[in-house]
Image (tube, rainbow over all chains, first blue to last red; front, side, top):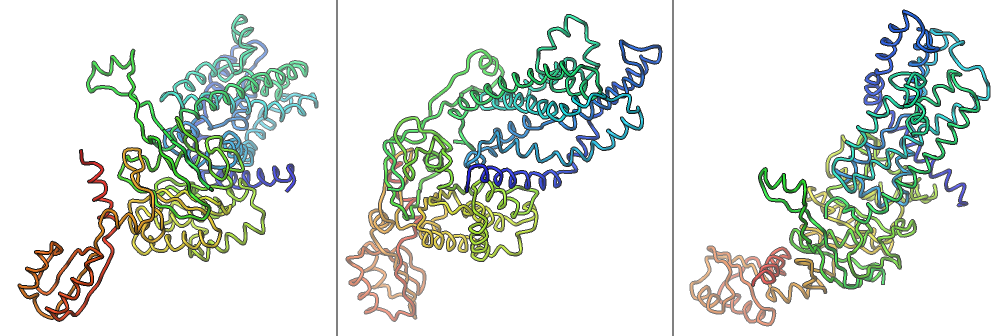
Length: 268
Length: 329
């Protein structure tokens, strides 16, 4: 079997089973969807504030579009690998995975990517709400940004996925790796644009946060979707995504290699 | 040699902490560790196609050795090669050559039918479609899996799951099988089915089988060669018969007589030191092989025998005796 064909066969099989798995766990998926309600709460809060007048360039409709878009980006680029991998490390599920001729990082990536059809399905109502409820004016109008959007969403997923791999790999050394992820999320709520539009952050904080990884996981694709940034800014964000994926990917692999030396698969 | 192990040592750093609040607070600032040596200088060779039983009490180092061979653990010192590969590097070709079945751990996807795990393994191991179909059909027939293929794994009985685990582990036709307690938790019928299957696979594919088990019936049925490990060291490596001969050189003779055993016969057997039990018309003797003819002749001369059996001592008794000897100060 040629290299390319073998690669395609391998991933087709992996994604096929991943889709079956995503369908089998649709209950958990639905719960995740229903409990991911923070953007809706923030939408209610900010639209109340905006009732008295626009905040920056956001009026009430602007906030509705922003937080519906935030939900959409989160659904499409979210990952659970930090919980899956730390669970497998602690409970012994990693042993069987290590015996497969496929790196566990690739295996989990396949499992994550296989959820895309289901994620697209739940995204349809959100897109409809954006287009019908808020109006097409709330979305970006530059076709180049529409072309960039899927790439930026993939980039956002990759930044998140590789950052999660770094944290999950820590579970090979310490018991409380998930606490580190809690910290990541706490900071990320503010710096990613999840609680408020990124551009409403105080200027000094915004200048620093522009370079940090959180913005490119949410605010970047979201601003591109809504046309809140220029094509040039989207491209600069894409470059930053690449930098963070490289940094986190290298760190995760280095930690993993060190951790594997210590790892005692399912008990000694 | 398919497997070559030289002076394998595997030790772990284990954190130690006393009980109580003060010990917990001390551990915050200074953690103490002690080194536990699970495997201590083990060496052996296993030829392709051999079936070897790896025996020892709990904590003896069997599973650790097996994990070092399978590539799940890297050794602290020493050398291990399996099929010419260093297992700890976990190269793709090596991983396609081996499989590990651990009775208590599973690779089956819990909420999906076994066929999904099989399909996943086909993709990951890059098994060509025709070979996959052929192997799967053979495994389904041998393990009688038709009825369970499309049920979610969570709904299967332990025995059904174990058979599916075996099928999933063998779909890529590995040349080396590491089996860690493969029959644990199974009923007698299922144990026997799994044993037969392992033997058939070994004979059909010339695969090397290394088995750890506390079920001595597994070892008796499957392994002409046994290695006994205790406290991380190999205390015996050779044929199963020779082990039995070395530890318990006698044979167990059970005789059921047509009438209660005559006192003179019982007295004579007792004086020879071979009487193990006597209850009415039933005698249980343990007799050295060299004296077997003589003792049987004496029994047959003194009493009418209705039924007679001559057996090797059970392997679990042999093992218990061997461990008692090696544990003795």
